[in-house]
Amino acid sequence: MELAIIGLGRMGGNMAIRLVRGGHRVVAFNRTTSVAEKLAAENPPMVAATTLEDVIRKLTPPRIVWLMVPAGKATDDQLEAVLPLLDKNDIIVDGGNTKWKADEPHAARCAEFGVRFMDCGTSGGVWGLQNGYSLMIGGDRATYEYMKPIWTTLAPPDGELYCGPVGAGHFVKMVHNGVEYGMLQAYAEGYEILRASKYDLDLHAIAGVWNHGSVVRSWLNELAEDAFSKNPTLEGVRGWVADSGEGRWTVEAAIDTDVPAPVLTLSLLERFRSRQEESFAAKVIAVIRNEFGGHEIKTE
Image (tube, rainbow, N blue to C red; front, side, top):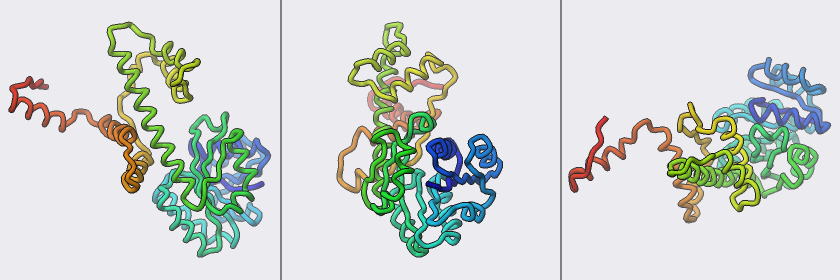
């Protein structure tokens, strides 16, 4: 098949390469034209496009345009820019981390032009080129079936799933990321307890043994093992953790559906705490404890 990939960042570029290696024709486009030109030159027969109009000219109807740009305004703007250039029955795929509630408005906007819309939650990170991407897909079932060769090329065996109508793919991916928050927090707390113990423990070796036969073995822990092999004490690494937004949205969904999700919620709050150089809330607790019980206050 053929398609355009718009947005050639850490995931979009590798996805374009994997598709070309799988025998598909890919038109690559990036806001910085040189990025697309370099990627295409290094991965023939990929071709680069210099403008959105050029993207459309280089595709045969029904065209498939896959967006891999940041969620929010960037995706909204890209959708609005490309829609007037497309013909009826063309397809737009949003493969980014768009909030699932935005998918139905996006699909409705596409329908005004007669364009089909698919949402695709995409997991795999920088390892996706080598290992394949886990794809969670929402939208029209017939369009999903039409695009089957693309899904199966991007994914490892059994790594792609039609989840349901528009929004279902991004919803499943959102919850996936919420679960990831909880798993990461559990590993982080476990390794901190090990590090704080009276024993001189080798965290790299422990991660390794946990990855062989243990009930807590996982790809995330394999990545921890790899990280400890490079920097056993994590020297020079700040304890500052970003969040992409999907953990927040998962907690919102839990609240909206009356589902208790304490682990996922607390793991999200721990990310916020990681960004504080000094916790003002902790200072408040310290002074109140001093007021009622004379408990010690540590000064700077």
